[in-house]
Image (cartoon, rainbow, N blue to C red; front, top):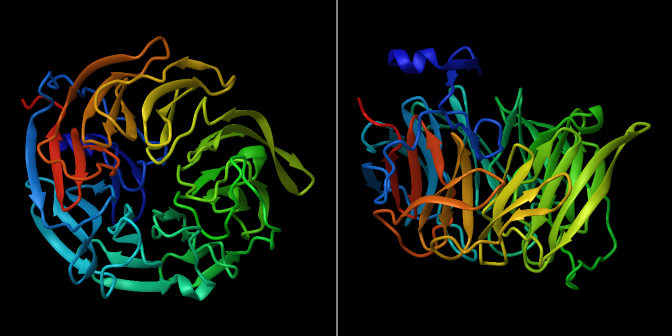
Length: 430
């Protein structure tokens, strides 16, 4: 570890591992908010894009993003013999190890991996798209334990495969089988034993705002932590809507079904104190909720609702910066948009920008890095004043749909494109 990385050490997460300020240890970064704390970026990003450090192949097909901790990058992918987890050397992109976690490639719509590993000390955790959770050693890839979601009658709301990235919280790992024996479960992260399994009530058939029937089962988002209304809870988007589950015992606290649709509920919710912002596409819409306490319960009160014509985020995600939500809107359009979260007023957008299709994005150093469905990457100033595009470029590799979310870690931009991973230098090399 060089002096600069040691200097930026901020948080000891285990006796064996130091989490650095420029690590990206899980889905959407250290706080699961799609924001990087790194500075001094983008100075060498010109009209042709930032310099390419390396490109590597052999990680398998899929739409998964990456986790970056220390000198290793971790991701998941599909090879001919099954779904695998790969560890990659940050310095040169070479494979360090690869571990098979399913006996064959899972079969579902848009085949390929979805899960970004969660790295915790000397272990990492992944959810397979066939429905299971696996714990592996970071050093070797050896499997420590694994559980099948069939243990909880695991079920997806529709047919595109489990897409969750698990959450490590203290001594627990949280995941979403979506079954009637456990919609969301908390497992001992050391041995995989169940701590609690949260079971939602049997709801009557419901119809979404766009007229389709809502489905039971897991959605395509990932869990976030909230302390809204003074109660620690896990918030997750499932087939029947956005739910809050008490962290201590898994008791269901509240549900908001208006944001659900019968096709695919995907975006990870945005948490800000007592507030939660949620959105889905397929003609649904977006909402701001306020969590309040009533006795031993928590209620989710709708502050406002935005219909699909105003804002619908499909699967590119949303980021909150200085009170404003930035995201792509439109079912498949991904048009960059900025929204005042408290008022629901559109600050700017929808904008065409560069490229086309869905827009996944992250925030760093006063800017948004936005990746479009066709591979185009934009650098946009993060300001509610106007849509200010600084640069755009087309990465070295593009094939199919570029749905893997971008990652910034250690002064580099990582772009996953199916079987390949590209690393771009965002800081000038001295």
